[in-house]
Length: 542
Image (cartoon, rainbow, N blue to C red; front, side):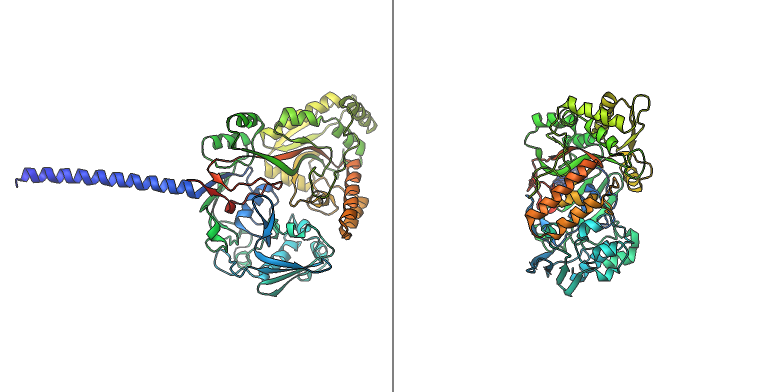
């Protein structure tokens, strides 16, 4: 064979092999991309979580990520039904005060360590320890014997009535019967934390590379301001039922930007739907728009620890009555929300919310009364109220603040100053109670019971952002806690709400609805009033 023919054949062979390699590489790349698309769930999470330490966080956004990373003794189905979690079963004593839990023998931490009853004892003690300064300590543990005394620094953490009977048997003793106690144990603050990781890394334990988790996922990366990425926890006892390998919780503080990213295919699920895009999505993608009732209230809080609102209930009532809630829900937010004239949302189990006395008054009659109270509180055109309204960065919050500002101007004749702050700055200012006067906030029920709304206004509760202090209110809440008769307990709770509304420590504005865009490729999504959606319950279609 001639050298020229051999050379041509070699060139042809080389070109053919390069082409085949390119085709194979392209095919592999397509397969990799397809596999990534099928195994990666992109979720919008709203504002950035302040911490992934379940004892150091307080926001809904942090809770959404923590429910992927950790698991409490109990949990919820996609439809909001209570189920077993890290505990496979439990028993309750006849007097309703002693709960015994049997942990799953297969439960492990992400590093392979067994999850034991002692892990829960350590975690509950850490939550109660006043040095931890846990936001949810009283809410989550206050019904357990000695918890309140420990939180107040009056007793040692070892006195908490939570004990490990053996490696897998945990016992909890309550001060009184608590109808919702099993639901309380679904809250992230009650999730176990890994003692070894905390002792090794201290305050840095909840960061990538340090965090040891007992839930369906483990922490892979946290790109501040961008996303938090989780990877499947192969050690999880129910790992075989987890369909999605990786989850990215994208930081999306601006709902409009979040919706744009969803429409561009960058997100599979949004945390909310902005007012400006809601109707458009209802028309264009009705099957992807998920709207359902919610146990959550949007409100303006007063700082009751300093003037002008301290010891001035008439002024607080005047500002509340001057807000046209119907206009706000119809014209400003417009996504199915309901005007709020109570603090506890309608639809709460075994409860009938109390309402402001003016809930059924005409708008004009309400405005007339508001002007009267404003004058009686010591303000008029010659001496107008000077007040700042703080809200965190969001187009929706800004629109509401502008609407409220206009209503106060029109009805009462004063000009409120609007102050826009970063979410973390707002939280810090509300907590410190040094500069806040009126602030935007919201409260989402952690379980379906009126107690989850009413108890945060008890004296000493860290969630009591307004600083409301009423011995009579606290007594009613205490009486409710002492009764095992649900009907009598309800009477005390409803009376507590009625009393609180008379004193106007805050202004409920509207009750939320859950609203999200959910991609057609996401399977297993269930609507529920708590708006809990564990990634482990979801899957992605081909």
